[in-house]
Length: 223
Ligand SMILES: [Zn+2]
Image (cartoon, rainbow, N blue to C red; front, top):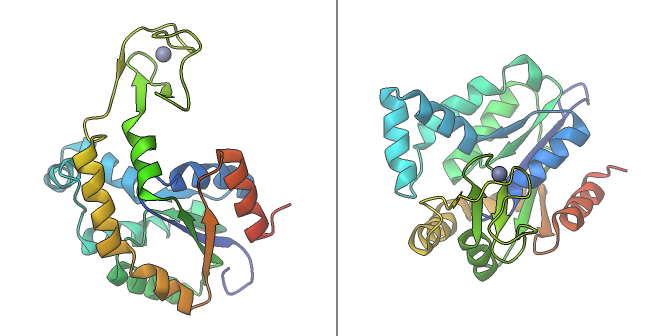
């Protein structure tokens, strides 16, 4: 909330692949506040092909992360945009303890306090299964999964009838393992940090998207 008691300011956290992006997008529509994904902001920058963009691209392709400074600067500018006046959902930020401390300062400077930090908990082996099984239609981009979301007809896209599919290069075991190790080392220290502030809310992320979404609504008191 901000100093006038309006707005929602929520952080989603959890291991890469826990479903926080999906849940943030669902919540964004319910609350009519923007979903700020640092991953998307970084990919947009990388796509521009600027020197910073190329540096980011190299980092992301190796399963690494942009520096705290780059990210904090990016978020700081973004939350001052008019669409954030009534709140926002942060996804992928803060990723490190220094980022969490910087977020406190950014918010305090603006008279804002966080409503909740929602940690979506999913065991590593389930993350691996989710990520390694996913693929998409070459033609329309529709997403599928070897186990959880097969096309109705084998090898044919439900949406456009396309018959060519692809898997993301970074959806491989080595890169995913690297991301999980990075999470433990870099992001996990932010969990007790937020817990001490009384902001941490943990959600079991192993159910269906709808089930997880319902749990989040009840935590936030959304009818
Ligand atoms: Zn398709």
